[in-house]
Length: 223
Image (cartoon, rainbow, N blue to C red):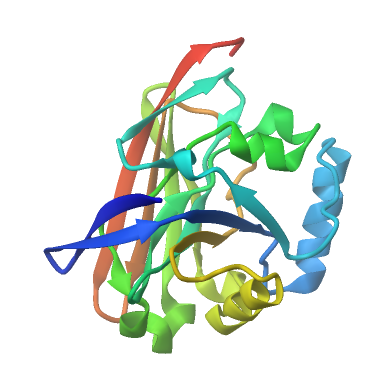
């Protein structure tokens, strides 16, 4: 079990975490999700055994350092809705950083070898749940000396919170003490590999956002 100090409205909020999960293929439009799976299959990425797909992740992958080490130059982040189940349920933004080369061999292993950065700032789910669909996920990637838009979409692209929670319960995920990377939005122009990754969760109703970024440090391997 690890303790993280989150920031809720300027106050330090400790939470103990013992389980980490990623949920893949949480697109609300099922037909488009299946089309995406077929596209990935053509790229050599195996089809999941179920949709959505649940991936248990090592606890030591959690990262709030602002930098992460990777091997090889073919890994990339994805801005994700992150749910943190403590005494309260919190929501923030994180990155399901994944080794895209290894993904063609074993999806779960490709997720395990990369850290999972997430923001220190959080909101209570109860603060935003009534306008979930209006929340926006976006990201930018730093490539060749400039920031390039990578993702941008509201949460109508992802299954609703109630479906996510039902799915976790159906798969016997212990919510208390768990952090769940619960889904992403489409890429604007396919996979890109850069030196930094910036992600944000925006609430247009209350005009606030959570933003964080990290540097990707390639310590070995070919670019």
